[in-house]
Length: 99
Image (tube, rainbow, N blue to C red; front, side, top):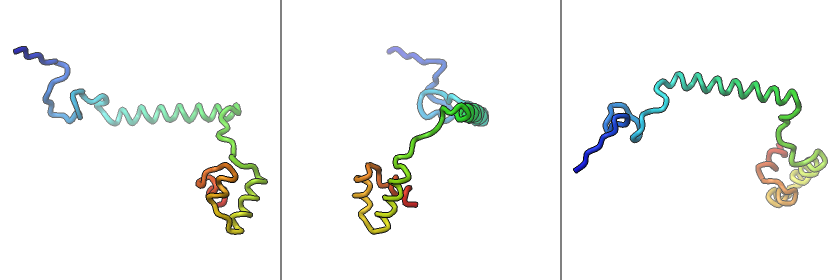
């Protein structure tokens, strides 16, 4: 019988590794610090893109005229599901416009 053991991945360890592999990050504080650096760089990049006019976000689903019509019909008591289908938006979007 052949018995082979890998020195880098022991079968039994005292640390909880959730499987055969050792934990990738040994110090969670370091991981948290690195994540904060990544988020900071991301925020800076988004700010630069907004300044250039590249990062505008999503366009509204309805224009002001359609929003006024939608609010008028919901105030009259129309079925909201049918209104959402009529305007081509989801019910959640309809409720956001009603607020």
